[in-house]
Length: 604
Image (cartoon, rainbow, N blue to C red; front, side, top):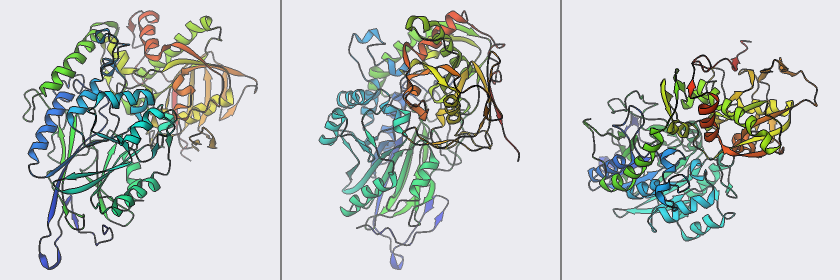
């Protein structure tokens, strides 16, 4: 069994050197670990003004190049989750959206990932966005029948027969043992416990105690004399990974997904405008005081992470981390590190996806006189003009359709910031149909709640602002719950007590942050944290079915709702074209929003 309590060798920056007894060099096992995370269907390139970077075809070519450059070293290639994401490029795979497919889905993401020849793929939260049945088809028909293996130790698939069949056949597992160059490596996977309220896992049971589950997997590998162990997670943030590693004993390398951070060292080539979020790797103390290298890299096929290490062959301890380890950017064009696209992926993925996206890009639906801010961090922490636009579209469409469904006209609307996905500032100018899919990609349908008590509505908003710190930053997991709103104005105090809510939607600690709430018609509902209206007063609230069913832990408390026949992308598209007449004015949607949400902080 592996000795995990040996004296830890001294660490100088990221270079570890150890000597065996009497100064003799111990036999070494060299490993090149290639890792990606959060590919999220960014199949074509890295986006506007970054067309020379990213893209699945270039990423596949770069992985092959790095694999070849490793020479005689063992090579392991891993995806740390969020392997696809609904949006324009993903919808090119679905016959329901792409007439060129003639009634048969073609999984372009799986086609690219399969050519990447991953040894293991971890389940991220977005991999369940279409539900278990779709994920089963994606795996079973999109990949080579024998590889790769899909991992997550803290998910129980027994309640979902389609995926349980894959688990029983070994395609899905908690850990696996790889043999490379005659040496064994253990890989363990884990998925965020937040999965039930940020995606659609159906009857998959999610174990919250990730520490216990992963430690059991570690112990099982050690019992089989597997002494080189890699833990791969999709926990939504590096802080979560650091905390988890500190409670584990026995892993040698940790790979994280879901954080969108780019770790890099001085001299690393970065995409234009990007900065490193920390050194590569980060060294984290485990439960026994050993330093565990933790790595992650930027998603969307922008980088390939490359960690090059040496292990002591006998003990399995890391003896050296190559200082040349780090992210390798995916570049094309005339850049010095450019690679030519993989021809198979270029022909079988890039060209058909580009053809579909071109149709969407040619359809200009509006002209905006103002830049629209959909940056991830912004929409998850404060009001933005894009957030206002999306919320307004939900309110307007819910009102338009009310008579068709025989329901009350909505008074207010809200959308979780995590539902706004383009992660970019759209410059003033033309707005296309593709932009609306980038902004609102999920298959989330408008939903209306009638007769929502003000106390319940206050709790919805307490949940919305519960992940904002004293400086106005989104913190921890579940930051996508921050709300973009319409029909009312909100003031909250981020220094006050935040709501704590469990995964069943039970409020464990009441929130005290919402201090003021006024409807657009001037009706005051809350002042100084106190409800002003009669308890019988209710609101009609428009939102999406994702939130209606408990997504992002919104506590609607099983109130009845009506699901409308339009997605939030469809609502946004129609609102811009018809209600705004194809013109988005800076007066209506100024930079920074128009003051609907105000954050206060009591200095006392």
